[in-house]
Length: 286
Image (cartoon, rainbow, N blue to C red; front, side, top):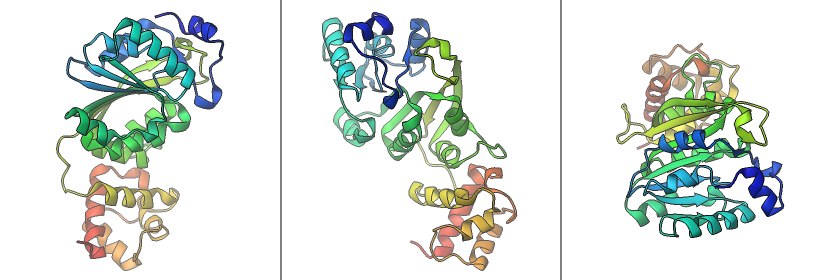
């Protein structure tokens, strides 16, 4: 593959700030990131924001079926030409579309296997994409994602961290999380203003216990973090969760063994699982 600078010159375009385009220029780094998803023949790998193909190229050599998703029509056409000539469409398929509109369930059903997800996520869509992946967790085997430091720290955070958030709790519920590598701005064209990290998410085969349905857990976690400066009890009472009273919240917190004066960020996944279970029973839901 030619360098991003050369490719952009040929295309007569500049990186689009509106799309958060920063192209990885070091092939060795791209190779390490691609290898982290463990691509093998028979795998279906969805690449988010394929750009100019830095990750697509090493993925295409693995024998996996690569679905390269790119919203920029000029870059998508460039990728299509490059990989049609090099590998053929049976190995790499290019989809020009918004990743948030990609139907992961339909892909899973089409190929009859869980998906592997990889990509360099622009800051402005990082959280929506992460929540989309969590919604489709049953269809995903693992994900390797390049994120700006701030977002990566939120995904990896644990109880007591200032970065502990809705994203932290829900990512922990759906997957085992780990940091893979840090990447300096100098590895991109153009260089971003912040460092990046690559994280690995291995999606769970079985739900954690006590078992709580993901949509209900998400409601409870959102309610808890809706007023971060308040205690967990007051935050829940000030939230949009229906039919809560000081008595019912106090009883649920006691049942979940959570001190009512704790702050939401001090709680871990296990705390929220117990709390969601207790609140579910108090609500009378079936």
